[in-house]
Amino acid sequence: MEKKYFYTEAMTVGYQGVPLIHNIKIHISRGEILTMIGPNGAGKSTILKSIARQLNLLGGMVYLDNRDLTKMPGNELAQKMAVVFTERIRSEMMTCEDIVATGRYPYTGKFGILSKADRKVIAEAMEMVHMTELRNQDFMKISDGQRQRVMLARAICQEPEIILLDEPTSYLDVKYKLEFMTILQEMTRTKKLSVIMSLHELDLAERISDRILCVHENYVEKFGPPEEIFVPGYISHLFEMTAGSFEEGSGLVELEAPQGAPEVFVIAGAGTGRSIFRRLQRKGIPFAVGILYENDLDYPTAKALAVKVLSAGPFEAISEEQIKSAKDWMDQCPEVICCRDSFGVWDQANARLSEYAKQCGKLKVYP
Ligand SMILES: Nc1ncnc2c1ncn2[C@@H]1O[C@H](COP(=O)(O)OP(=O)(O)OP(=O)(O)O)[C@@H](O)[C@H]1O
Image (cartoon, rainbow, N blue to C red; front, side, top):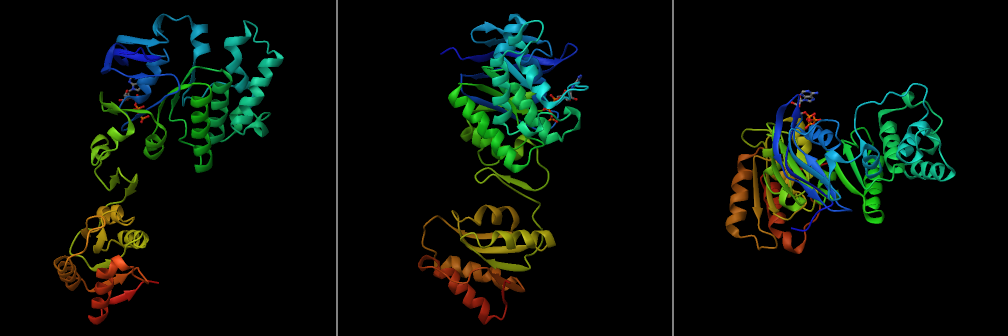
């Protein structure tokens, strides 16, 4: 096997000599992103802390750049590896810039005197995460999201080859989440940075990661590229979801579907139905939907929330039998909502259903 930049062999992690997860086998190359996902308390932070040497390994080996990581001198490790964890660092009387500057310690020698070149790296790192305007503020008096950006700037100015991040985007708003991920991605491309992180945002994990490690409670269940992880039903299994659903294809989460005999039949399609399905869900009204093509934008939400979805295969002709079945379901519902104001050439079955609902006096044109 090609030697990877970072890899583990039978790594066992845990606390006070008690193993939590055995036999962890992961690897990444320079410029790759590995993301850990899994339920609360599964052991993601424990793995990160063990790689960062904050916890002793309970077994196995970790290699970085072909070296036994446990034996690497501290200063050398600090020049290779940056760590962005969630615990608050003690920082009395320190400005945000002071905190970022501590990222240069592996390069500044014993007295921590910053050269002109160090100051340039610090300024660039602050600029990169858009925190220059925070530089003179007391680090203890900024928001959680601002703190996450300051900590990323500190890691960037450490100029590492590999960065470990524990839930780095948990406090960031959507703009900064995307910015944060873009910065990481740019650094993987331009500086060949390797990234190992934990994320609870599955949509981001799927998009950014080259490899995903699925940590189930106390064991590692899967390790592979996102397309091997986000397969139907797997995320619900990994998180042992008991309410609502996650659809791996679209990355959509939906709340619990209302149960019971359908009270409304919805004619939707082309993405017109999703907001109606969710409104019905919020009111706890069970509903049926038809006839949707299985590649329609509305289909994943309908599958998650409706009692019954009458569907047709992608680009297939809809048969008389399918229309008859949809009418039968419609007959059982006191009300029909039509989300469409026009029907295309390939959607005449739904035009007929809408006409049928009108004849039955059940059609409600949705506002
Ligand atoms: N210092 C500690 N000593 C002993 N056990 C600990 C310690 N810290 C955490 N644990 C336990 O180790 C297990 C894994 O915790 P860990 O923080 O690694 O989970 P996680 O996957 O990062 O969870 P989350 O998604 O909630 O952050 C938990 O059962 C936790 O209670």
